[in-house]
Figure 1 (tube, rainbow, N blue to C red):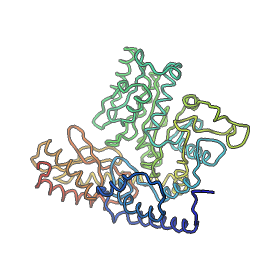
Figure 2: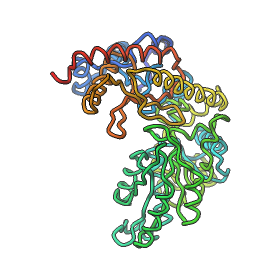
Figure 3: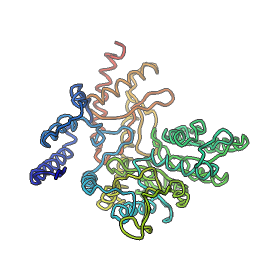
Figure 4: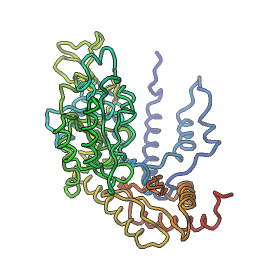
Length: 486
């Protein structure tokens, strides 16, 4: 009989212990390594070989991992990684992934622990976000998928009933979705995928704080009604990707109530601020949403991937995705009894891993208050960075918000905008490629800037000091040599 289990269990156990020891040491010594480093062409080539038809001893496979893969991640676990609002994970979350993979639970539904763990996590999330206990929800890969689920439910509510059978016809009275110009592009992609059409996503200008202009929002809704369009949904943002701005969620909720629109909140970055008693008032009105999409792998530091969608109307949610089949027939008992819960009736996937375990273990270990303290720490670090920028003649604060994001640029005297943009683009690349830190790009009002978004429980003020010191050194070097003009 053939099997894929180890032939020698003790040898496999020893290798497992080695892997765990190596990873613990890797995480312990993160600050001693570059924040990121480019992959050499030789390494890239080594990962583009033909598929092996014969096996290789696990020791050799692991050696290849340590040589060609481990040194070249994107870097988001490093204390000086501040790009794109990517969380840095935790040791416990990593161990939970091993446990979940060992059990290899297919969490679509039925009488099994994986389902109950996810229901427990969703219950915690509903309580945290101020949603009623009878609301529905499901864990997803992230906010992009959660948004797609939300738009499918909204389409079910506002489009004709026959949409599910004959498809979407948007040519007569198209459904309209409203969001600020700072909203994440996952909304436009979801509108495209669900057949709502990208042109029916209405971009509303923002104010000086990068928040949606709610007066213009209402004007656009009224104008669309006159044109016989069907205003369906307004998306409020709880922490924009660009600056961390938070829309006036109460005003948006009021407008939705007046006009009979669905109120959806994109909380990918900021929704979990409800963990902080100090910061949660910034999210006032979010609890009034009809649906809320947010990430757990950003500021809750759960290892990738982990997102969530909560929907107030559980019946409509299930009606959108439930699609019975004979091979999914429920029984009077056994693994799939009729009285149990089935997550495949609330989302896109039938095949689902046990994402909930790493969330459950992480929250059980640390408690929500501890996460709130880390978020407050990151916001304080953003203010610390701002204070450093405001008093420095070579640095200019370009944009910021109420949370953890700061956008700035290096500004030698008497340089025009085009030259400054070229300089700062090169500066960003050099900082990344030299392993100093990983900020990300952001452009507003024609100014290219370096964006620092601190969703990192490993960051210290000393990391920010080191970053600025190296940035100035590299900036002065580039200012003199002007390599982009060569």
